[in-house]
View 1 (cartoon, rainbow, N blue to C red):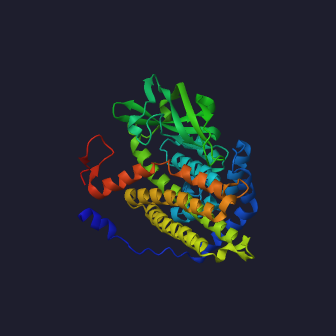
View 2 (cartoon, rainbow, N blue to C red):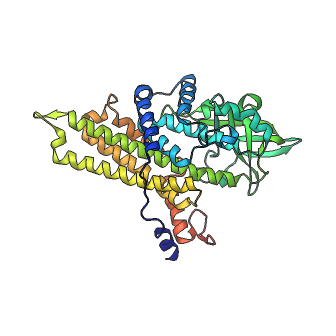
View 3 (cartoon, rainbow, N blue to C red):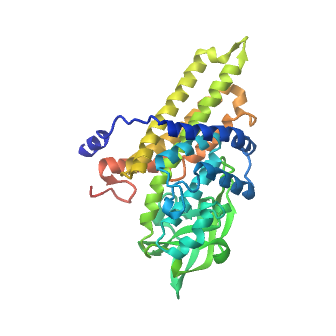
Amino acid sequence: MNQIRSFFEREIIVDFKLDPEHEQVLDNLRRYLSREIAPVAVEHRTKQMDPAQCRKLLKDLRQFGFICGWIPEARGGLGLDMFTSGLMYEELARTFPDLAGTAFIAEASTLGMSELEQRDLRERYLPGMLEADIIGCGAITDPGAGSNPREMQTRAVKDGKGWRINGSKSWISNGGISDVCSVITKTGDNAFTTFIVDRKEHGYRTSEIHKVGLHAWSTSELFFDDVWVPDENVVGEPHMGMRTTLTTLERGRVLIALFATGICQAALDAAIDYSQNRVQYHVPIAGHQLVQEMIADIATLTETSRLLAYKALRRLSDGEPNKMQSAMAKQYATEAAVKAATIAMSVFGANGLAVEFPVESLLRNAKVLTIPDGTTQINKLIMGRELLGFSALKSAAVPTGK
């Protein structure tokens, strides 16, 4: 009970009012997205994006602080605070969630590279990553391991002045367009080591996975067949790779929650626009009671998702403990996006099933977001562990020691 009380007695009221500078940045971004990105999003509702076009869009987004925003100025980035950046990612996801996801993974990889202690690796890759000339990805999930990285089978064994990696990774975002990969491997019974692997130099292979939604966001299998990397490509200390991985997952959950909030907002925008312009019996359907009820439900889902996502984002930006809030925001916002898109389809009636209208793609995209960075069920178990002090993620319920 004390743990529950201590969590919910924290800042109950959080002021998310934006200052004029934030509003100006977002207004400029919205105009750009409407003019340049929205037509591309429509074109790619049901198809993958050409890698060259994807790279061009990532380079274009740099003008607003994507890709290089999180990186400190001392390392060549813009040093944006995470809250400002998160607001921009929400806006991008509202227009083109596939591109938001691609940019997020590229930026997270760039941030990871900027934080490496190995100066040689930073100097080799970071300048190109800051310019979006080099695209990175992170490879955690093994086939069959699901949300539990401790079940992974990809292994690295010491081989002379380096390591030899064998295994495969699945559902890797940006895998198909990546030039460099941060891959976590098992190097002992309960030991994990992360390596920087160069696609051209060390030779991993990729195979694209065709998803139900977010088609323009590359998701791939990665194959490491007797791949040798030098000792210099170990990230941090050998056998200590899980620490960085867990931190990365928390950040990912917050960003996915923001993407889902963007989809909720897009569903609300589409439902309002359609209901005001769709005329039946000489009047817009916006005047129908059931339509107004449905739109009210979408608005409520959108606002509650945004509040949870912003609170988690604020904690992430301030460097505060965020396991509970990030898990709550991610599981709620992604499921809310599925509900919001489903309701929006009902507003559209039969037209909601047609690919010419936007809402069917919103539903498909929202459904995809419920899976990465921990499924809805896994994130609820994380919340349960934080609230109760027992972990149901293990084979037995063992106190967490809090």
